Amino acid sequence: MPRSKNSPALRQVGGNFLAAHEAGHAVVAVVLRLSLQYATLRPRGAESGLTHTRNLKNETPNYLEREAVCALAGIAADRVLNGRLTFGSAMGDVPHVRRIADRLGVADVEGFLRHKLRTAEEFVVLNREVVEEVARLLIERRTLPGYEVRRIVMTQGNPAPLGDSNRGQPRT
Image 1: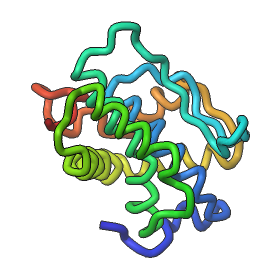
Image 2: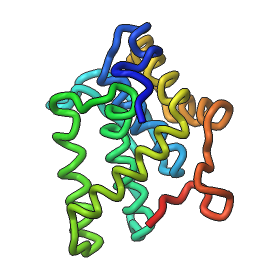
Image 3: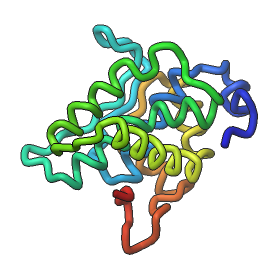
Image 4: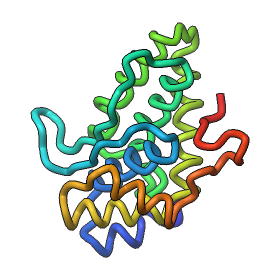
């Protein structure tokens, strides 16, 4: 899966693992057509970085499944770009996905987590160069608005990695 222990693009800009993590969330949010507001490396409370999407009032099961994939995309980016998980990379993401699984009534939560993580990794691998570019820009600017990430994904990325009939939809 990873080309090397550390992504060359990230090594060139200082090897900021947090940027790769947040870029994974941001790019996958756009690919899955979630409403990305911004991604930032500016600390907010207990968070070192944050990717903010706007939640829907009446979240459908499909939306919640896409949100679960997006929540695990930071971990996927850690694994794909850096070849490992960094300490704390899953501290908020995994509990969030567990809550989604509970809301969906999933019996096998661990299986749900593994499946959604594999899906997130597929999206990150297919959009690796875009994730690296967004990470580089996050290191440079600290915050990227959602519209800018969308522009990068739509011009450089693979916004429909699972085919036109499933455009932006994760496998279930």
